[in-house]
Image 1 (tube, rainbow, N blue to C red):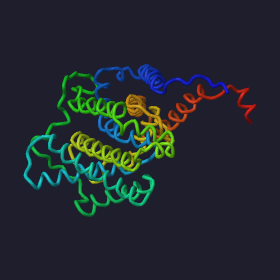
Image 2 (tube, one colour; image 1 turned 60 degrees about the vertical axis):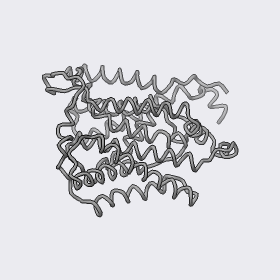
Image 3 (cartoon, rainbow, N blue to C red; image 1 turned 135 degrees about the horizontal axis):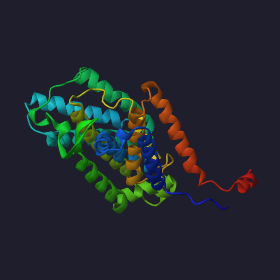
Image 4 (cartoon, one colour; image 1 turned 90 degrees about the vertical axis):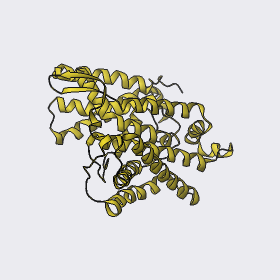
Length: 332
C-alpha cells in the first residue's frame, strides 16, 4: 500500500505559526512586536514545563489527568509551609520543595497503579479530585496574596527589556532559562537513557516491551515522578507570575496542555512524541489564544474559534498521511 509522505508535525506547526502570526499581524499591527513575543513566551513557560512532564506519559501510551492538581498541591503546600517557617528568600527553595512534593505525588500514583495492575488514567482521575480537595479542605480554601520578600516583583524580573506603546515595559523573563534547561534535560532523557527509550518501546507495543524484559511498572513510575516534579515547579513559577497562590491553580487547563503536546506530534496511542513538538504545540495554542484577543474576538467566542482552528489543524495535517483515494476505495 502506498501512502503519501507525511510532513513532520513540528514542520507543520512552524508553518502554521508563521501563517497565524502573519494573519493576525495584518489585522492588528500591535501584535507584531518584541513585547508581544516576550509576553507570549512568559505566558507559555509554565505550560511548556508541564507539557514536558506529561510528554513521557503520552509516549508510553498512558494518560495522566492529575498533573495539574499535583502542581497546585505542590505549590500551595510549599507556600504555606515556607510562610509558617518565616521564609523571606527567593524562588529557588520554592522550586526545590515543590518538585520534591510533586515527585512524591507521582510516585504514589505509580505505586498504586503497579500494585493493583491498573492503567494510569482511572487512578489519575481520582488523584485529580484528591489533590484539589486536599488543598481546599486540609490546607486552605482561600487564595493567599502574602509573598516572601524574595518573591515580590518576580513576575517582572527580565533578562532584557523593551518598551512598547501598547503593552508598556515588557521583556524576556528569567524563568525562560528554566524552560530551556528542562527542555534540554527532557530531550537527553528521552534520547539517551534506557528509561527514555523504554517509554517509546512501551508505547509502540506494550506486550513486546514486556517480553523484551522491560519493567513497565518501574519505567512508568519514573515517568510519573518526573511528571509530578515538573508540575510542581511549573505551578510555583505560574503562582509567582500571578503574585498569589491559589488552591485551584490550573483547574480546567489540563486539557490545553495535553492538546498542545498532541498538536506537537505525540500520539494518544503512544510510541511517538518529541520535546520540540510539545513546545511548539503549547506556543501554537498561546499564539492563537492571544491573537484572538488582539483581533477583538469576544471571550465567549474564543473557545469556539480555538476549537475550530484545532479541528482544521488535525484534519489538514492528517491528509498527507492518508493513502491515495483510489487505494482507499480498494481497501473498502
